[in-house]
Image 1 (tube, rainbow, N blue to C red):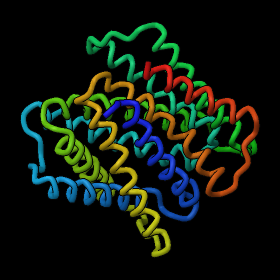
Image 2: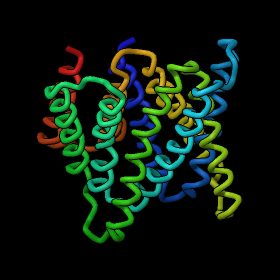
Image 3: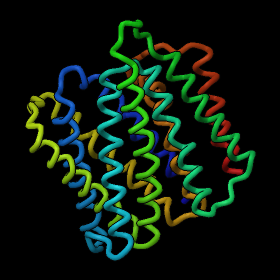
Length: 281
């Protein structure tokens, strides 16, 4: 299966996920929401492994790489949730969505040959997605201090790029199913340790439970799709395609929630998809 297709599947799932968290973040404790999402995703991954009859955990180098991916994924998720809580989207989304640049750096450091035109295509995709996000945010200027928001966004971007690289490397050694399960388990264990220290309010309410469980399944599918690309050619392109989750969030909001989009936003969407199309050549 094509790595770009897997990345687009992940982007679509994370787009739906982000629509939900956008509206839940004002009424639901974020750490409680993240706990439900990670628990659901781990249960989903466990079910997939049991159905396939494979072992739960990877071994050897794949286990250590999965542990690193799990830590990175927890940091990425915390950065994402709290950065979007602070906002504005026009600041947060372009920074987080730029993580494919780091993914390309990781690929080149790992010995992959990335041509100048491929680098240019990735930069075009990142800029187009960022433009759509910037134009979609009607927030006023009275927002929290930008320094912490930028730091959280950068933490998320670095975390996502590191998660995908380490997870894909683990998949090469020990299988994508087991690697994704281990990544989830480590992220959940880390979150539980953090909750024991902070002891925050975790009461999410019954109305938020079904959306959060749905988000967990979507999140599980998305991460599995990107990590599964590790056994295919050019796995870094799955991370590039997945970065379009912000664009999918806005497109889905247009379809599902009837939010309006301007001509410049449509142009940004077209340019981003053309960039993805170019990478398939």
